[in-house]
Image (cartoon, rainbow, N blue to C red):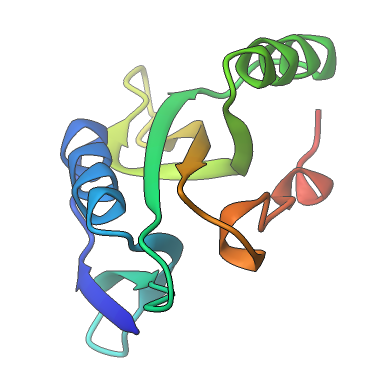
Length: 130
């Protein structure tokens, strides 16, 4: 089963959306950018089980050693790496001549879940430059 919702702009709104959908058993999959320019959050659910998903959005570390430390810290808390280099919607870096999206990392955890939806689905860090 699939759902597409308008992508919430600020991190606080997006994490609330992620966790509300996760409580309903929907796993976040990706952001779809429609021809209209609208961004939609795409979710998937395995109706054969009743999983729960929880998400955390954290700042992207500045270098590889800090990223590794962050990965280890989150793993020790039962959180799986989900997406690296996630541009956080309307949250922007402020400064002279800067209006870049703030780069973030999303971690997730699943409960009452078995199969492909439950583990680490993505490894976008391989596309990242540290």
